[in-house]
Length: 328
Image (cartoon, rainbow, N blue to C red; front, top):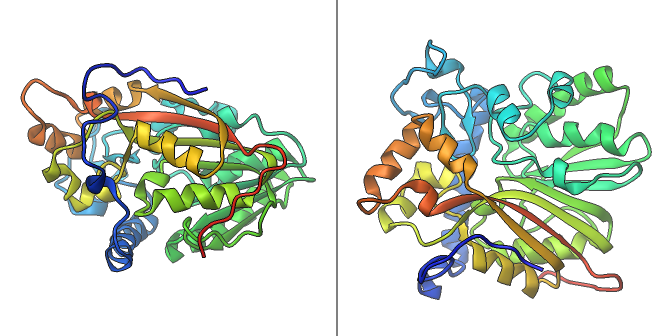
C-alpha cells in the first residue's frame, strides 16, 4: 500500500521521462565527483554550513556566526545539527551518546525511528557520512547485531571510522563498521542484510533505479527498508536543477514521489508506504536558509519550496522467497 498526500493535475507528475532519465556513465561519474567534493568539504569543516559551501555568512537564530551553524541535508542553515536532529525526531538519549562530530546536520528525517530495529539484526546504512545513524542504530541491535555504514566519500569514511573508538567507549559495543563504496554498487553480499536505512542520500544518486535494485539484492527475504529522503511533488524549475549547491544539498537530484514508488516496485520490493512530511521543508524555509532563499527566487510567483519538495519517509520489504539481482 502506498500513501500520498498530493492532489492536482501536476502533483507527482507533469514532466517528461527524459528529464529524470538515468544519465550516461560519463555524466553520472561527473555528478558523483561533484557530490564527493562537496561532501568532502563538509567532512572537513564538520557541518553543512554556509562557509563550507562558499556562501556568504549568515546569522543564526540565536545570534552569532554561521560558522558554528549546521544545517539540513537541503543546504546551509541557521541552526545547529543538534537543533535539527531534535526537531526531526531524534531523542535526547540518542543524541547524548553520540561521538563528537558524527552529527553534521545532514538529516531530513529519522530512519531508525521507522525501522523498528530488533536485537541481533544486520543493518546497512547507505551514505553513512560521519556515522550518525549507524551509532543511533548500534545500541538498538545490540552486541549480537551488526551495523555497516557505506559512503563513497573517503573523508567521510575516515571521519566515521575515527568516531568508532568514542562509540565503543560510550556504549560498550563493538558492532559498527564503515566501508568505502557507491550505493549503486554496494560492497555487501547478496541476501545478507535485515534492514537497509538511509537518511537524505538516495536523492544524490544519478542512477536511482540501480540503487533500489541493489537494496533488493542485499536484503534477505523478508528484509525491510526504512529511508528518510527528499522527493518532489512536481518538477523543479530547470535553473534549480542545474545548481550544483542544490545538487549537493539533496534538492536538485530528488525524484518525483511517483517515480520513487515505481523504481521500488520494479526492484521487487513490496509493502511500499511513502509518507510525505512537508513540515521539514516549511521549517527550512522559515529558518531563512540561504539555499532556500535562492530557490524561492527561482520559483514561479505565488509558489513556495514546499509546493515542490517534501521530506519523505519510505518503508518497504523484500518478499519472502524473493530474489532480486542488480544489473552487472
